[in-house]
Image 1 (cartoon, rainbow, N blue to C red):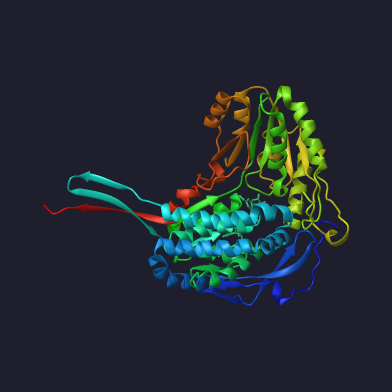
Image 2: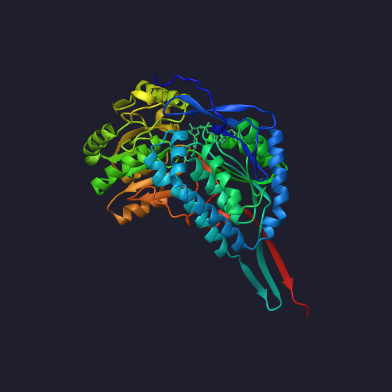
Length: 494
Ligand code: TXE
C-alpha cells in the first residue's frame, strides 16, 4: 500500500559514509539515518547522520588541501575533472541504476539525463576554467588596473534530492575548477551517487581533502556547514524556506551565497503556436521526473480559442503516461521521493478540490504489483477551474500536478504568469516573434524558453528572481561566484 513504510536489514555495502580527507569514514557520533527506496517504500541503505564534529573534520581537511590545489596550474585541475568525468561516464550504468533506486525516477531518465549531465558538468567547467579571463583597465599611460580572480578557499555545496548527482556536480565542478576545496552535502534522502562519486576521486587524481562529502540532515549537518568559519561561500539548491534559513545563518557571517530555490513556473500557450510541439512539450514540462524539477511548468495558461482542444489533448496524453517500476524501461512516471512528499502532493490535490478545482485526470495513489507494491506512486494529474490566486495556484507542489487556466489577451496572460511570489522559469508558445519578445521582456523570471523547454546550454546564466533565489550559476557566473575579484592598481615609476 502506497504511503506505508517497511524496514528491512541493511548490509555494510549499502552504507553511505562520509568522505573526508580522501577516505570514507563513519560519522563521529556513530549514528546513521535510513535511506528509503521510493519505488518499494523500504529502507535499503543507511547514511551517516553527521554533526558538527564531522563538519569540522571536513573543513580542516579542505583547509589543509587548499594551498596546493590552488597553486596547481588550471590545466592540471582541469585534467583531474576530466579524469573524473571519464570514470563517471565509464560507469554510467552503475550510477544511473543507483540514482534511479535512490530517487524513484525512471532508469531511462537517469541514463539519458542525470548521469550524462553530471559528466557534462565536469567537462564543461574543466574547459571553462581554462578560458576564464579577467578584466584589465588601462587608466592612463602610467597606470594599469587589472582584476585578479582568486579562489575563495573552502566552499560549500548543498544539494537536493530531485536531481542528486546532476546538481551536486553543478556546484562541485566549477568550485574545484576555480581552485577551491569543497565540503559538499547531498540530500539525506538521496546520498548514494555522491558517495559513489567520492569513490572515484582517488583514482582520478583528486588530492585528499579537495572534495569532502558530509552526509546528514539539514539542521544537524547542513547548518553547521553554513555557519562554519572556514566556509567562505555556500551554493544551495532546494526549497525556498530552507534557502531563507540558510541566508539567515550565513548572511550575518558575510559568506557569499548563491540560492537556487523553488518555482511555480508559468507556461503561456498562445493560439498561434505550433499545437503539436506545445502540447507534447507541455506534457514533458509538467511531468518529467514526476514533476519534481524546479523548472517544471506547473501553471499552464492557454488562450481562449485553443483552450478546449489543448486541454483535451493534454489530459488524454497524461492519462496514457505509464506509472511503473522505475527500473522498467517502459516506465514514464516513477515514484515520488518520500511518503511525506507523497502525502504533501495528495494534500494539495484535496486542497485543489476544496478550492473549486476539477481533477481532469490522475491524482490517485497507484498500487503496483510485485516488488513495487509499497512504493510512493501517484498518477499524473491535470487540474482546471482554479482561481489564479488560490493556494494551489500559488504554492510550489513539486509533484505530478499541473493546473490549466484560460486567458484572452497577452496582457492578461503575462499578468497572471507574474502573479506569484516565485520567478524561476517561464515558457512561451507562440508563432509571433513580436509577441515572444514582448512576453520575454515582461515576464518576471530568470529563464524564459520560447517554443521549447529544458533546452540547456551550460554557458548561460541560471537562477531565479523574487522568491526563486538570489544569484546566478552556470558559465562564467559560476566561476565568478567561486572566485573573489581583487583589483590591482599598478603605477609605473616616473
Ligand atoms: O528540501 P530542502 P526538502 C522544494 C519542494 C519541496 C520542498 C522541500 O517544494 O517540497 O522544497 O523539500 C538541506 N541548513 N524543493 O525539504 O529541505 C537538505 O539536507 C542547511 C525544490 O526535501 O530544501 C538538502 O541537502 N541545509 C528544489 C537540501 O538542503 C539544509 C529541490 C535541500 O533540502 C537545511 C528540492 C538547513 N537548515 C526541494 N535544511 C529545487 N528548487 O530544485 C535542509 N537542508
